[in-house]
Image (cartoon, rainbow, N blue to C red; front, side, top):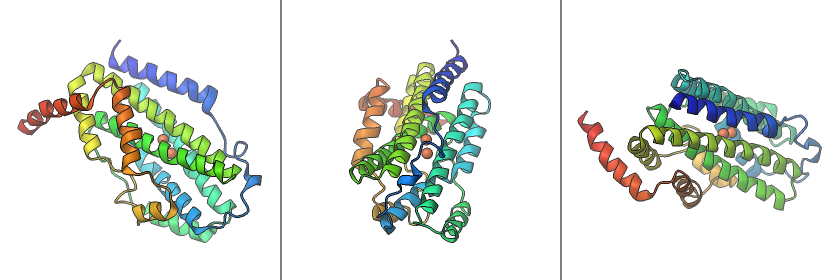
Length: 264
Ligand SMILES: [Fe+2]
Ligand SMILES: [Fe+2]
């Protein structure tokens, strides 16, 4: 099977599960009537607002993805299915902020202007490196949202629990698709792909980092971030293991490829 066929097949698997098991909608699957009465906390507002802002960079993510993936059917269609799924995330956070009263419409308008005044650029150059980035970024986002789901459970906040259950499940599925892309790339060029992965791990940062105002501070105040240790032990190391490689192999792949790139 060619790589293009493999990508198409991987996308069909992803899409079938999405269509059969993972579709949700903001109107029926979120218990808006159970908005917690004691939610009027600034910490919570900042946390959801930070997530919402990062999800609002969607037009840029989509533009970059479409440019990189447009030549391969399975990948281009993934990009657009992904964009639709991600569009629900920004929307559900926005609705939460307004319906809960944590933010007024005027406050949200200000946020919207601020976020859209910036544009996100691809942090890596090639499609293969961006697949590595996608796998890690989606995992990190999954871990952050999953922790919020657990927190909402403890706080008996049914609305946020449902929201974070739905969005975290999407992020986990996205991470899985990017992982399949890396596997397909590894079949084509194992050393080159692992060198890319090592490079991306070494230079990884979240999309909002360095772009959204006070990103780290807001994650800290809002309690929305994950620690570097959690990122390493629950996103990076498991990915390395799932791909059937090791840190040693990543190191030797970098050592083999980086001098070649420097020379060319
Ligand atoms: Fe998302
Ligand atoms: Fe995602």
